[in-house]
Image 1 (spheres, one colour):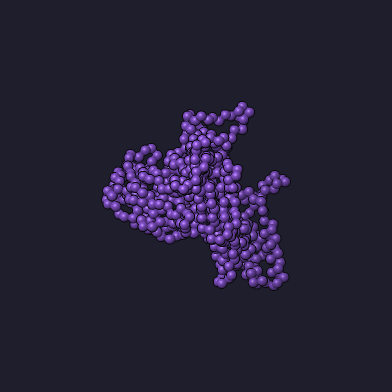
Image 2 (cartoon, rainbow, N blue to C red):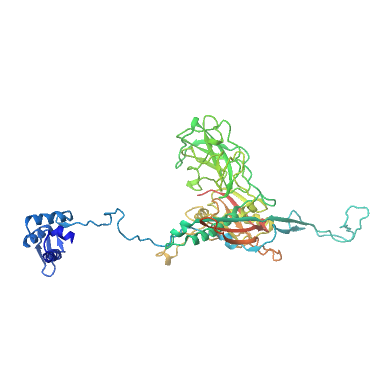
Length: 582
């Protein structure tokens, strides 16, 4: 009652109730459909002059017989809610609380926008291993095979031919009339098992504060599992182990990088920030996402001369590093060499068409734009496990004792054929780079590959070699009945092996470093080879999830496994490196 008495004054309850009812009726009778200050009568199609709400209320107060003081008190009490003839609201989405008294439209659960393709891991057989290492023996050649270092042999002999198999040349040797004895070649491979795994920690606060939205503990478990699968996929691609039996860390680049300054061409950014008009570079070999080698030699002690604002500098890496997926270049500048602590990782516009930023897949690179003055340095390079390494004196985790050798490492170190392109794909002989590998593999071991894996941009470039080039021997024809429904774009899905005739499927691999293409034989064209699959994962223990006992206010989870990748026949597969982006 206190508000109504403040509004209408002190009067008997019956009279007060009557005033309240009349006040409410006055509001309800106010016109609700307005056109300016006129009421619209839809049925009669007429407009009637309507008084402003404040004027209507004042007339009602007078009709009720209220005194002037009472009317003034009422108008003072509700005056703040009236303005320009319209009612104003005290409660709104931003008043009296800026965030409003409104519902929070949160859609549960959180969207998981995390790509997690692992195509090689999904394809490779996973077999059970035992003990501390996986071991296998191979017969790599015998007379006439042309493999394993064993050459051809002539089968001819006569009745006079005498051969001694047991002790040739001995005075007591027994000779028999028989054909020559054949030769064998073989080897034994021992691959130590290594431990793999990842973990996650989820605080109680994070878990219980999310109840009603999503189960964060379930996300922690599944994310750890998928993270392991993604890490394993990369290790299958380009892992390098340092235990006996594996390839070891990448070698440091050898030779001195050279540089030549030239006038910037159309589309290139001129060098700026060259102190004393000289720059110095060092190069490291890269192993995909896993690490880099020790740095090589600095470019000439006198520096590479460059004119600021007009020139760019072409850098040439003198020697390829076996097993490298690409190279990183560190740049410093000064009137004299400032040293490795001021030699920064170059991530500028040099990388072909702005692609593969921070690395080059080839032995050449054009330094352009503003030279780096901060970031990763040779003297303090942050590795994949967030440790700082001086690359001038140590390796940047390009090899690890807890890794095994991946496919890339096997192909570059154990007989697989490597073709270093150091150029874009040819437009005059589309797919010729693949034919070079097919021919070499057939010549060496009579290989007949099954599939190829490419980086997405490289596959697009290969497809583009067939389109819009006058020197191409291919053409795209649109039939008459297709003219109304032409689909823009074309893609190369396979390459036919011109040596054996097999159609080799082309696939895109999401984590393959740009500039590299794997050409794989999954089976061998030898029916009795005892090799069912050329690439096999052997695991003493496959993925095992562990929820740790609660010893603190968190839920901890891990995934663990132990194994290795067995490459029974890497010489039957090949590799194209140094593909320059188009």
